Length: 477
Ligand code: 5AD
Ligand code: SF4
Image (cartoon, rainbow, N blue to C red):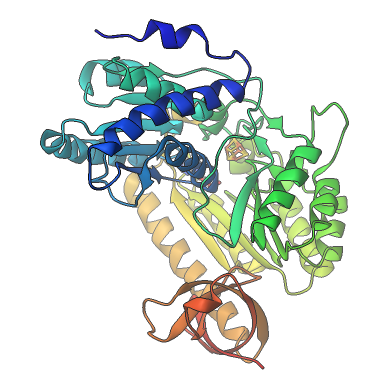
């Protein structure tokens, strides 16, 4: 096996200098390969799951572009990386199914490089599974070393047949590597990584580690750079943004961070995800109410309306506490739309427990809800709970919940007809030729007449018709 020892003799130890060194190294190899081709080599980094992965994938794309690949949205690319999710079991199986397809493609393009990273690779036994049964996967890495893509790719390009590097923690955050944003006008911004909550069903704390907050100055600098680059809307990202700032040398709460970020000129809209109800402070409600740039939308995962289930889920709030919080938010921020996540069929859930969930749905009236059937994740406490709920009960409850959530959602959408809203135009509408699609502050979409030149602009739109989960509208002069 050919191994370029000399090149390995001088990489800097410090980051990000080390990765920039490997970006250069890879670039000379890719440039050489490109020089013999009519079209440059292509790369397709693909995100599964949450906004965190979407953002990580933009980092992968940034590195791959810096290395000399043309970024495409096509599994037929010369390099494909899946940034995986493992929050529910079927997500894993989907990835392995798709890897089988990639392997078939590799038979026609033996130089094709296949990579897998993200949450799924951090679950027990994965390294071994790739080493023994998925030899055709060239690169396997985790959630903590995404920034090392260039270094890992260099090892593959210089002779290692399969590069597997999965860490079990990271105590530091590497900043300032290339990022290729998917959208010119909006961007996610990581404010923290990991989670300390250990909800009993959730695998995230095991695959993304303990909470680490970025320093406020670094976040504000990044937001300034984004604004200078034409971004108008940012989404601050963390598993539990409400506990932002714990562990920083100089303390800074999430509300304080919001005030700092809102002062950045050029940014018109601020969103954030995800809020844990137990940590949502009055100070934060006050910030949402008083900072105009913050969108009137809050995602506030409920998970269950039953105190018994919430206790077993280790959520550390009660139905009453949640309802009280939702009421206080609605009062302080009139017109705010609330969305949520709900799990049906958590171990031990009875009909009575489920009725409490339905009751919260009736009382809060969510604009939308992500509803999930409970999926046991090996290694989490709930997976070992004895009283798993039979599938047909889960399915029946789930169908009932979904129907009700959709009815309420449609009613709320209907209530918006005849009102005006500011829409940030995201795309040309595929369904309605001659129309563009914009996102309203409350996160609903509106289609209205327009063209490509409007993408990235914010327009005052009259909502003329509700179509279930979106509006038709017309531009107000
Ligand atoms: N089963 C079903 N849903 C889950 N979620 C997290 N873990 C599980 C699980 N084991 C849901 C929660 C969370 C969302 C991102 O995914 O509702 O808020
Ligand atoms: Fe998972 Fe709970 Fe952390 Fe959310 S807060 S990532 S549900 S452990």
